[in-house]
Length: 318
Image 1: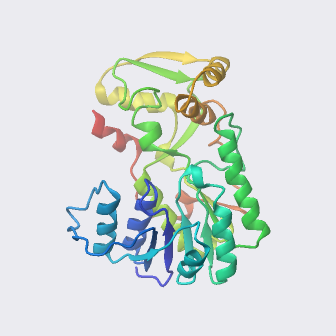
Image 2: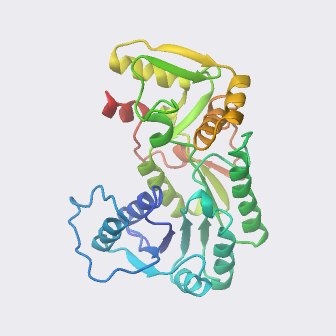
């Protein structure tokens, strides 16, 4: 259903930003994307050709074909940023982790523009106010939490989007380090494998983000994506995979003490991945109670939204 909520996506060509753009267009929102250089004559592909665009140029061409309004600017250029923000109602930031602290510039621009009804900071992970993560992940989560405090102190209307574990990073390899495909013989499980984790596809994150952006009840609240069929322990995930391949994997369980030792002794990106897995699989950072005063559980608030289940997602790797 068409809506008059004009949405601007910052970081529109990123791994999450692109899905938010597509979901916004599909939902009927007037959709804007901030790009550094507005392309001139770009050959516009058909929707079929652009179904899985790879390059930034292909993505921009895809957006043009879909009617996305491209605005030239940069979060480091205050003037162009304010100009872009003045044209919309909702601003969604989907920039990467290296630009987390730069969001203070966006907050400043939002304040100056004075017209924004909602700002989504770039989080798209666990609830950074409810975590027990260790280095090198902890400082990143702490940075995101500090941006929340700036937003609140400045009185900027917001929605925080907490989606936990992307299937592309946590599920496609069953959280096995040093491999991109699910194992067929052996699996390493951090902890006892009985701690619940929350999985979601990047595409579904886009859909739920836009649904929240169009929901007045999500104003000044955190929206948590913990989908019933994807709220699984690592043992349950492994079991799903074993049923698909008709084989029982040889499992090695690693104690928290050993995981923490491995994190300290490893370099990036292994230490970062291990810390993320440790956060979900051992510390249980996806396990908490919803506070109706400040939280919304997406699956309960938007029960009509279909989503890809973990079981369905794993079918592509059989």
